[in-house]
Image (cartoon, rainbow, N blue to C red; front, side):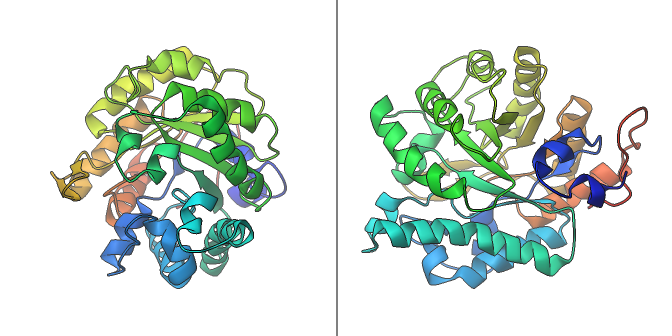
Length: 327
């Protein structure tokens, strides 16, 4: 069975996970937008461009497709009704921009004429809307009811926007993960849930990673777990802990570049080279990752290096569908 057949019809994400070839995710959307010379919105970041420069977002998606990515993560990470209200928009207008984020990724995929593209609707954490770096610290000041209200609005829209999967990502706090897990039960679109970790064993809020993962075992909508916006040096250990805690769920790995971000100065320090990214991707796949990609400060060149690393690895053998096409 070739990959195009494997990805036809409904349940495309579930079918692709069953293919033995590792998934190649895209990289940091804001990273590529800045490389294109686009000025991000001061509070909404990439999401602000859904209103002001949608063509720039589409161009960024195309750059990752050209690098070989087969999963496009939408520009909805920091999008919310509350955020767009600061631009004077009503709820209906905000919801239309959420749907636009999926449409832009879909159009970029269609223009590539590739049949292997999956669309992941980004569901970012509440902390990402606070402009204080709390998605990287887990220092939350919102209770379960507030978190549920915040996420329910976006999920209701993105669940019907035509994405292949809901990418609930960069989650630093166990309470938020529990809220999302409950809300996802009422969604029709499958999901992955990706953690933001402080080290190999804990979320940013100090919750043991194994504990957070175990709470998602046997969930009817969660088809994969993930590690993202986490320093690469922590990935192998965190990957092992996730696989040990919930062995039945595939794990996707798309960390940041390992550089450090200072929210006060809004500057990064440190560097991950493209060969480093290729070598890291290979090690993650060998340790059991079902998909690899990048997050903050990981651009198309990093993804292209990962693609080459995947191509250079031995082809899977044994039972199961084999692909005839790939990135």
